[in-house]
Each structure stands twice: as structure tokens, then as C-alpha cells.
Image (cartoon, rainbow, N blue to C red; front, side, top):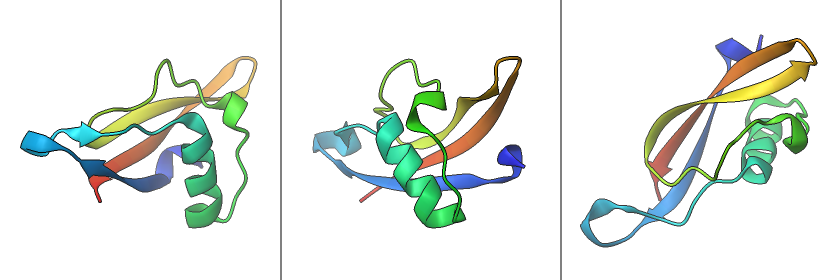
Length: 78
């Protein structure tokens, strides 16, 4: 199940510990394939905008026209 999985990505921190850069749906899809050994279409990841903060984010993934799952994306400091 998608809800039981999570992916972890690292981005650089700038001054004051703020995130420098962002995480896109393409990067989430690549990390999911690498960390969970399963493919997910980046177009199904319903990310309104790139993730620009550290921490855990619940990202909606359209699995079927009437079914949307949540993928936990953990963004850490590189």
C-alpha cells in the first residue's frame, strides 16, 4: 500500500537553516523507484508546487480517477 511507504530526499540548506532548492514530482518518482523498488508515474503525483521546506510532507498520488493515495515524503538537510 502506498500509505505504508515513504521516501526520503535530501536538499541543501542555505543561510539560517532554510532549504536551498526544492523537490519536484520527478525527483519524488525517482526516489520512490530507488527506495521502494516500484515505479510511479510522475504525472500521477499531485504536487501543487515544489516542496521547499524540510520535514514530512503528505503528497497526494492519483492511483485511479476516483482513488487518490497519500505518499509520505521526508525532506532532510543534505
